[in-house]
Length: 109
Image (tube, rainbow, N blue to C red; front, top):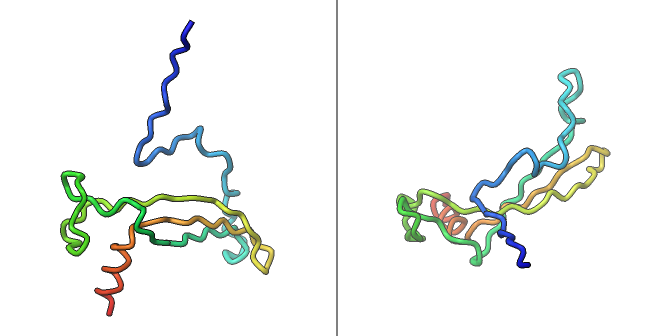
């Protein structure tokens, strides 16, 4: 008998209650905010990541950010570390296409 298994559907934003395995402890307003857990997001770039998309969800012109309607980003992590103060830090890497960073650098100079 053949088993009918279906591959999981991949969505652009695929976050659900079952996907969250841990929660950050609830914030206590009375504590010093510098003693609370931290979340650090590093943005990194690579040409392997899908470039920005236009309104038709086709690849947009990498030199014309006015066409960009969606900038794909891929996250990994968290990597949990302790700061020198002993505070828990969660590090995530957000991967974007290099053309986004190149244009940001060009426009900021």
